[in-house]
Length: 237
Image 1 (cartoon, helix red, strand yellow):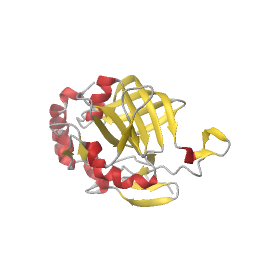
Image 2 (cartoon, one colour; image 1 turned 90 degrees about the horizontal axis):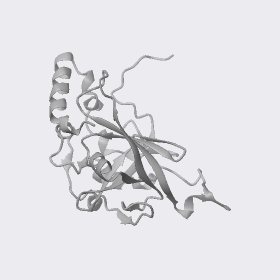
Image 3 (cartoon, helix red, strand yellow; image 1 turned 30 degrees about the vertical axis):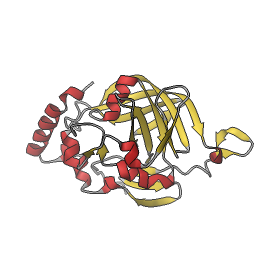
């Protein structure tokens, strides 16, 4: 029997991507994300409009989508509740985020040069996709879930694909062997992979309802929307 429900989030299971972008001073920002999907050599990426990644993508028009594998949960957790934005946006402070200028250093990861763009790739990610921005769209605005936090969707064109040799099919250098590739997957704020749950995510701390303030009682919902809209007004596309 199906039941009608109203969950706070709709993370039914998507891969975790570490997005590398360049800051104004040419240092590297790295941010975990699981709001992404692909069609052909194009990707749609959903981001908080107040994030440093959104700012960098809008300015430089490029990034690398570094796909995390199942052994990278500790690195992702080290930066899951950090933001490169300074000051920390109000809604992120509400969720417990803290500012960190050097998220790459905090993650313990390293970089290597890209081939078609200036933004470096992230090691030890086994899959690294260089990408350029094609379009930017406002997202989730004006509906019942509009909480005053701007959301931005980027359409990306993949310009170069790097895959570690260990993932390739024997004798087929342009084919990934799905039996060898075990991506880190975010499902309702928990980490999974293609062979089961592998551990807890820092994002699972606190109530899931914090991610859906539009579902709060009417007076609180109206106040949330007004306050978040005012604080985030400069980030709207």
